[in-house]
Length: 386
Image 1 (cartoon, rainbow, N blue to C red):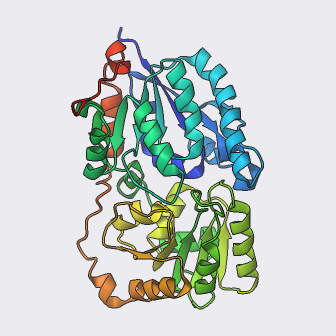
Image 2: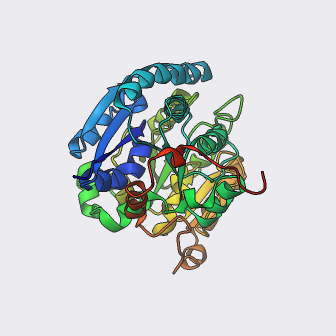
């Protein structure tokens, strides 16, 4: 009888779980896979909504839960959280010894499982490498994990080419598309009426989602936020804030959003929206504003006009629905006006999303269940003449 291969996967936040959802579903259902999901980071934090409960509601088995996130709002707290995760994961992965460890994206905390897996000689498969976001430490994390990984799943063709240019062997690098887009094809999105009932919203009002995170490459990670809130004070739309990532400066952003909403009755803040509700909301609002990768990767599938602010996503490939604004009140207001124009919206008809077609999970699963898991996977050879 063919032996199952053990594939461990790490999820640290609501954001990466929403991307991993369909790959996890595919892997869990595959007859040749023993899936071990490891939950850590902000999933287990009451401050960030205990999103591990959503995983349990989805019926995806959790193999281990690791408390690794300090209750902090500083870069020191971020660094210490990496150390705590290394200690916890060393014991766990040392016992588990999976055939492959599946990681996604670029959050600072995935340096911990990547480092542990490297020391334990566990092959790493990495999703969403090869992208660029110059205004966040995510950029360096992403590239570091790419070089530590043995199988790569990119969202775009340009990202695949970038990874190969880093010296990775082409057979290891697969363009799968962004797995978050599988939700638009496979998940049953809420109707406007269902959303209004579930979230207690009136979506007949003109509405914008604001998803804004700390600029982690900067000494002052929230220095751009004053311009954002100054611009929002001059808008009349219903403003729906999403919680920022658990990075240095997140508490300051949350407090600024709450003070903003105290001064107006025209808005809400959501601590933790599950993936389907979030994608459904994107499909039923008029505009997205902020600096989230979601505004670049997912909104193009709708297509939803998006204003991308400041430094955080600088350099990231995006479709025509995204307008880049400087971290300046006037620039933000000008781009919002442009994004709301009938001319701009009509220009997006027939647009394709460069991040994929909604079939990523099947492609990822096919590779993970067929790639050799012998010594040839661990031994990487440099290419490009090195």
